[in-house]
Each structure stands twice: as structure tokens, then as C-alpha cells.
Length: 284
Image 1: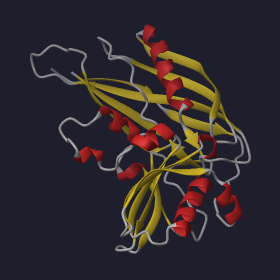
Image 2 (image 1 turned 60 degrees about the vertical axis):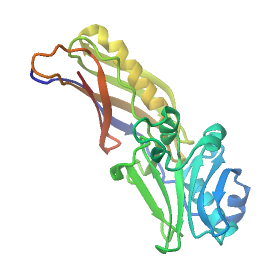
Image 3 (image 1 turned 90 degrees about the vertical axis):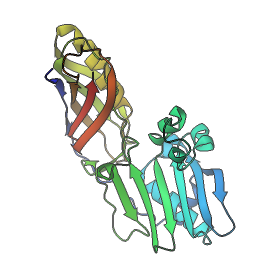
Image 4 (image 1 turned 90 degrees about the horizontal axis):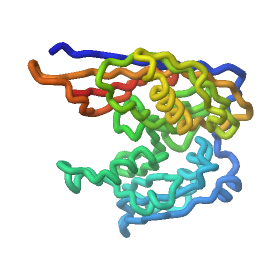
């Protein structure tokens, strides 16, 4: 049986001027006032181990993440080989375990797997490698294409791997895919929103949805809305208008002579830039 494919186009266009937010940490007093709590501390007396901390969701910005790293460096000069995960959820930070995949690689815990997409950053200290850096990623993925590493201390304005109008894309979840239909679906969905100064998307609405078959347009619109509402950009001094077109691709893969069952096998994300993201799902 030949593989069948259907898709929905994804592009992002942002209208309006945006100023790049200052990300230097030249104000130690401001960094000290940032609310930051240690949730788990599994670092031993030799300065090796892991920990988790939380910051308030409203404080999520590149500048504040750098503040977290610099405060940890000042407060824990004895750390030698340490990884610290940063979350904006106390419950997740309390229960997150580094390297949970090694507990049972055959049947990974669903909860821990979900936590990966909620990790906002990881601060790494390695005196052995003479390295100290802040790293964050999109889609909860370990794929290096979606990771940004900022070596510390910063000596110039840091840049992120994915930016929109000079604003770092800090959070992007893997878009949920519509329930696999019994026949191929194609279409396009245009979503409009306002990008606020704090980096959140507000007033998200579908302005156009076209699909074949026509009844699939509503489901595609819901997917587009849910995805963009959860994105988070770095803070800025201005607001912008945003229009987004999403693209999804499904591939029906079935052995010769076997019927199509509509069973999803997995989802993958491909993003060359924030203006071009493709979500693929294999179905048998």
C-alpha cells in the first residue's frame, strides 16, 4: 500500500516594531530580588549532583534566567559538577528527576516524560570541563537543533537559536495533532493574536480555516489555537500583532495488504525558524 500524506501549511508573520529587550545582568540588586526557590537539592558534599528550582511564571524571561544562573554561581562557589533544572511550576520541580529515562528505558514513566516539556532551562557547572552555561530547549526535545546554549558569564548580548523580531522564543510545545481521520485531510488555518510585552499571546483567534473535507476545518483550528496560546517569547518594551498559519503532515504507513487502522505511531516537529514549523505524525 502506498503511503498517503496530507498537510496543513504553517507560517508565522509578525507585524509591528519590536525592540530587543536588554538581557544583561548588570544590576545585582534586581537579580537578588528575583523570587527563586530551591525545590530539590541532590548535590553532595563534593559539589556534585542535581537540583531543581522554581521561579514565578510571570518572571520567565531571558534576563531572569541569566539572573538565576549568576545568583547560583555567587551563592554556591563550591559547586563542581552540577545541573540545575529551572521550572515555573512548584509541583513539577518537586517531582522532576534528572535522567529518569535510565530507570526503565522500556516503559518510561508518562509523568516524567511530560515534565521534560515543562523544563524552562538548565544551569550547568562543570569545573572538569571548565564550563558554565545556561541551556534551554523547545518542545522538551533533546534534539540539538532546538536548543540554545549561553556560555557564562555573558560578555555580549546573548542570542537565541530561534527568535521573532529579536525576541527569544523561550517556550514552544509540540502542537497536538488532530485525531487521525479515516481519510486524508489537507487544509490551512490562519490565526491572529496580540503579542504582549510579557511575551504571551493574547486574543488568539482563527481568522481563516479551509480544509478538505470541509468538516475537518474546525479541528484544525482548535489545534492551531491551542499551540499558539502556549508559546512564550522573551519580554519586550513593545506589543505586536501576529498572524500565524500552521502546517501539519500525516503519513499513513501500512504494510502491503494490511488495512488502515487509524492508529497514531508518533509525532515529530521540524522547525527551521519560528516562521516555518512542520508537525509530522505517522499513522497505520
